[in-house]
Image (tube, rainbow, N blue to C red):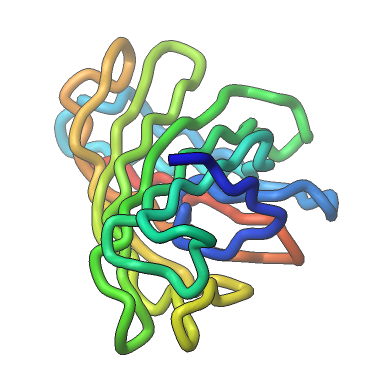
Amino acid sequence: MRPIRAACLGTATALVALLACASVEAAATDTGSAHAKGADRVITLIGVLRQQSRFPVKPGGIPAAQGDRTVVRSDLYDKNRKKVGETGGTCTTTRTTGGGAEVCVVTYTLPGGQLSAQGMVFGILTQGRPTIPPPPFDNAITGGTGVFDRAHGQVHAETIAPNTRRFTIDLD
């Protein structure tokens, strides 16, 4: 399969499909260690897509087909627009009808460790083509390393400006 280079957010590449076009501030709040009992920790970041490749199962790749895969890498920025990490992940199309669906697995590399998240993203296709802007979604945090050891919670992702996403990481 040959990759199709994506020029926009399109598929649910979602947890990380972020293109740089507008400068946006994000608030980052740290309320304790990720595995402290009874403490919640919320981290808000802005992501900027640096690479995105789509691997369709059908020649040409439009319309989307079950099994299409997207691979992404994004830079992450804090409220001061300082680069604080990156994400890398894959999304696989599981349904092309009724708005479409993808399952995504993403790793966030941040100071002190990594967070892993995964889940379904719905409504990412309109008539078999990527929806722009893609809808917001929530995915589960499935684990972490370092300061994020034993992490639980969720990641909320939303498009906040053309080609820009805000990730709100809510650790339980």
